[in-house]
Image (cartoon, rainbow, N blue to C red; front, side, top):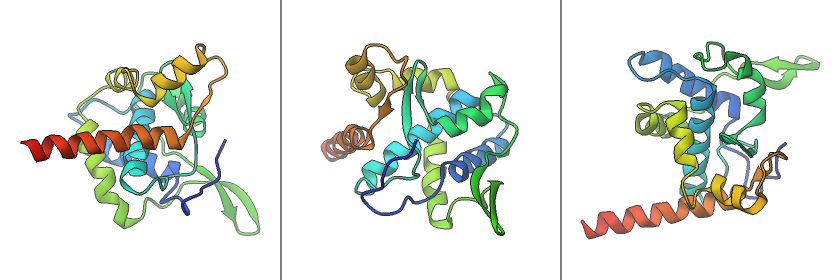
Length: 183
């Protein structure tokens, strides 16, 4: 479920970014909990803004798929599905090499230089529930909505291409810059 990375290696892994958000959420118990839906949408917004701000370089290698409730990264879903609407209370692991073999491991964390970026995404989105963030991904012109309109049914859970995500969020950056210039 991964795509070739044309613009260099990803900055991190989906598990490391997810765990960074989980740590931020645990440190602020007064904000809405991070259930599986909120985690998926935090990952989507982080990846989308990273693509737009970094010349389409992906934040992580895993693809987003268009599921009925919004963009989903399948490996994170499989590890959080049992949480339902409850808070995700375990760290996300990834397949990696251990000694001479392979196993699921918990990543050490995101690179230090990514922490301010992840924190900024968190600070913008932390006050919202998973349902609120999901609703935002369904707005007209959003990547999920474009794929939904193209496919009609999301039964096949089609991939949301990084180029589409980047194009939509690059346009948002331009609009934000224009609005700030006009102010």
